[in-house]
Image (cartoon, rainbow, N blue to C red; front, side, top):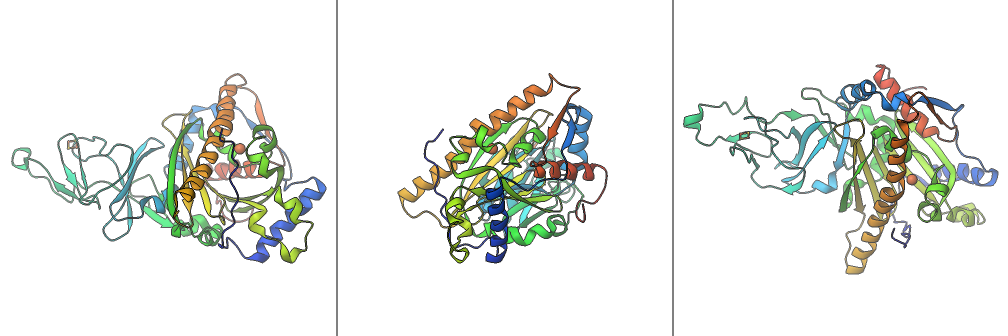
Length: 403
Ligand code: FES
Ligand SMILES: [Fe+2]
């Protein structure tokens, strides 16, 4: 564990209006004074089979993950023409690439000749496109088939019929979203709904990419639960997160399936003693947006923002997380690079050594109590909300609108 806790440097950036921020701070100050937190009306009991059942998991993959707009990466990772990222998500090979026209496209990362995975997982830049390593069929960055070696012996291949399979892809507020099922369209504005203006206010599209680190984790729902509550801060993170954040003192707001949690930072104790006009919201609020089903954006108005995108892997017990650090101002000196590295490593180490370690232990625990249930507290309101959103999606019910 890195022993240096990163400084929460508030930038000049405005993540929301001062009035809105003060309204959230007012709620947090009540929680600090009264020992409360935002709460759900009741506890929620969740059968362990909801986590363990392979049919349940398969339905989540095919009916939710393969159909809704999935956050895949930040725009800043793929800022230049020809930048691409190949990832395997929920059993699907995909590649996103910034074309010559500046637009992001997503395609199935599979060669149309004999279904070879076209690009290995990872990022790169290409000027001309992609060449399959099996028989060297080639494609341009829009996915169009451009070359078939020895075509006189292979037989004619219609370029239009054998382009890479396209997937719906949209960039919004600095995040790239993809729908994993070919032929399905997506309405990203409707999907994000009322959280979109808040995400746009973060101006992630103007940030500079610093690092992206990968982390393998357990079952996606087990991992998800840990992102959504601050009840665990003091027990699980006594030497990291809990040094700067109060445990179990947070506000919760929902925007359809998406969530904003604001955790009370310990600096709020001192700020509360000063006149309200002097309050600096950015220095006292741990602002985290969570976009269903697996993206958390932490530190939205600071110099450094950490975005974690967690998505299911190939099987029930696997997920993958890409944790990206964006900077509002490109680092100018080796010292600034060093500071940014410390923040990125600090976050990553806390997730890896504390959250993901605990969640792996949860997963290991599930099989010993297959007929039991979990109990999700009133204070774990965002966890409850995420599972209710998932239930609604699986039931074909709307996720935006009244709850
Ligand atoms: S499978 Fe790609 S060129 Fe043959
Ligand atoms: Fe945590």
